[in-house]
Image (tube, rainbow, N blue to C red; front, side, top):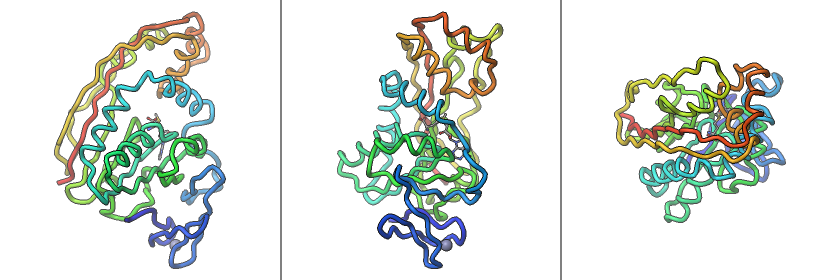
Length: 271
Ligand SMILES: C[S@@+](CC[C@H](N)C(=O)[O-])C[C@H]1O[C@@H](n2cnc3c(N)ncnc32)[C@H](O)[C@@H]1O
Ligand SMILES: [Zn+2]
């Protein structure tokens, strides 16, 4: 089954002991945390989500608040998977959803290769305990370390979108599964922080070169039962980057909050 390719020469990487090697002898060691760094700009430090954000997401997700979404993603991946398939989670974070669908594929007797890529070393280090069956690499969604037409399924849960790369790596007839927030997602959380909150903009469910094969929406109110959970949820969102400390600290006055969650789980088939 196809796996990662060398970011320097593009040849297939073979796992030899604790290193990946290509035919030109470019070598990439697997870190103690279980991932391989295939990012070419190794020197430019840390990218993507920092430790604080990763820990906030891990603690929040582990409390089960997003179980409905997790189960829908797992069902969708399992529905489109077939024996011998390669599944890539692009922007996998700490592999919360990845590990669940990997386990489901295994339980369903579907032999598969699951690859996971994220630009954040912190996220992949936190993924260590999730599953041993996932091959994890630090890499960018905008330069995926997998060969052309090598993937049957690409999954993207709230991560950056790169149509060209997803199109390149998917086989014809392969499926791109995308999770997006809908209009009122986290409305009450935004109301708690901003004087004038805005609804999310939702684009048409269309991607050039793909056709919509399945669409499910989840609308669910969750009750956050501590200030820590409320802050952790906010830190998982892109708003966190853009919000002042003063506004973020408004959340300190809450010890519980009912919040609307709304997602679309979309499966697009490559034409
Ligand atoms: C909102 S998080 C979602 C993580 C995971 N899919 C989940 O839902 O638990 C977005 C993730 O995308 C990663 N990311 C951001 N830019 C990226 C890029 N250019 N290439 C790969 N990953 C990226 C971040 O490090 C982060 O882990
Ligand atoms: Zn090479």
